[in-house]
Image: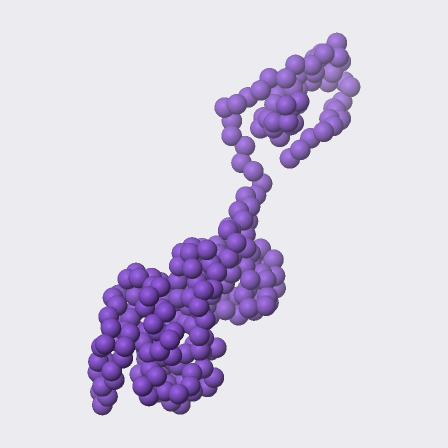
Length: 259
């Protein structure tokens, strides 16, 4: 709190009886433009005052605001509502499902101010996992892949085809994964199929899911193809896109998959 004027509203009777009036001022500004956290000011009846600086007691600020670096992202840890204001009783302005991406703007008193699609609002900081590094974003609903560099800028964008939505066992799993390894000229095998691919980058080994080219059997990507004619769970890419991702990514690169 910045204090530029001091008004003493104590009873004159106290001054007359004791001869001394003590006040405590927090956050006063000194002549050298520095702020003093605690000042005990003693005002005597001879109109002279003396300031005694107490540097031992720490004053906790009313609120802490942190501004995230430009183009910072994270994902929500559970299904949650985007709030209009930074408190639990504020109105909900959007529903966000687990693992969906949000853009981080700033943080204040345990709440993150974020951008989700075209809306801005608040989410409890503890409910967001930050991704302050290079990552690949796969949006199942949009059927889009976006590759973000360490500065949060999109360096590659492409249409994709994910797992067949109408068949439960072939849907692509949502979650935050990482590229486990990379290889070229691989043959992917599963129940009733064997597909040769040029670039193979698995990110969910337990489910056999990964990034790979699919030009050998697909002529188009994006749109609603995935709903009835999608993959067996992998993220199908145009050959040129798969090649660029293979060259740019490394083992350990995060892969965020969400709806």
